[in-house]
Amino acid sequence: MSSSVSTATVTSRMSHKSSDMSGTAAGKEQLSVPEDGKDYDRFFWAYTEEPHRSRRQAIIKAHPEVLKLCGPEPLTFPLVVAVVGLQVFCAYALRDTAFLSWPTFLTAYIIGATANQNLFLAIHEITHNLAFKSPLANRLLAIFANLPIGIPYSASFRPYHLTHHKSLGVDGLDTDLPTALEAWFLDSVAGKAFFATFQILFYALRPMMVYQLPLTMIHAFNVVAQLAFDYVLVKYIGGRALGYLILSSFLAGSLHPCAGHFIAEHYVFGQHSRAQDAAAAQKAAPEETYSYYGVLNIFTYNVGLHNEHHDFPAIPWTRLWKLNEIANEFYCDLPCHHSWVGVIWQFILDKEVGLWCRVKRKQGGRKVGAGHTQPIEIAR
Image (cartoon, rainbow, N blue to C red; front, top):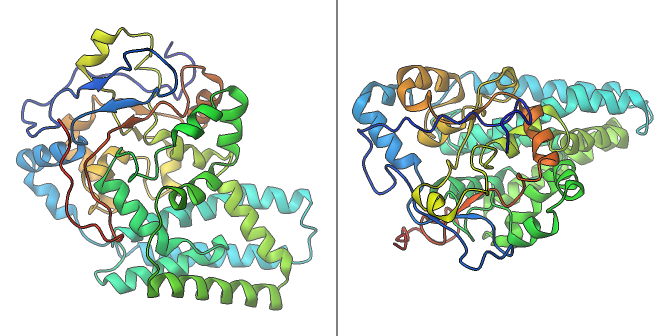
């Protein structure tokens, strides 16, 4: 697979490995290759823990000052208020415009989808308690940020996402992973185009299919607050206003430039061709997380700095670039993306890239907010 397929092809610079890294994930991971060569399971199966814990320990050892970057970012709150206000204003401005019209669609795609993607990632940021020191204040702000999205999800997103961090790549726990059925059924250009177009629905419905969360008071309040907001919006502005917000949410997770981050973060691209022989594959598993260093980080709370985020989830969006600067020797040689649009394009058209291209592990990690608090040992 050629790295010239698109500008999104991951830049492969795998030679750099810090000699200071320690722990079971340091160095090269073992990767399983199906002995019979069948296509029923073509994920990358790794048998070591995820790499971020080891790199975090190495960075702290080399640069203890990075810990001063942790903590809430006050700028998040006014930014959320501004974007929520923008979306309510747009919904009001379009109240008399036909839903099936170019003004509505273009506004929803250019402004609405970008704004709601920003709110998705504000909720992601708030999930890590990075807006306020108070956990309750963070939960309430997440519910407020949820309002222009139209459908309640912030309370459920939190435990699923924190489990993604604690159980990266663990089959049955990390709901960011596609299932084997998804990967098999959508293993074609048309299938991948369908996935990229409707990926917001996959990310919304897949978690509930993998495991269900217990309902809590914050879940109930999230639902009640959202339904009340939707009711007031429809009653006093009109149904087209709510339609605009929901359309914005759909487009934010569809064929939109900012939606490229969903695919870019953890899918394995061109630098690890499946044409490699089994002996070479056993030497090292591909990287599991990829950063993006492009301009769209401005609209998305720097979520593109995804290796940095997984290494230090307690560092807010405004300080991730500082982390990259301080510990640059740990990041400069990691594979990365330079275009989210190119990521989507290559994902759909490149036959060597698809939903199979994820690193999975059978065990490890733990659930957050689902009744499991003890870590599970990784099988060796």
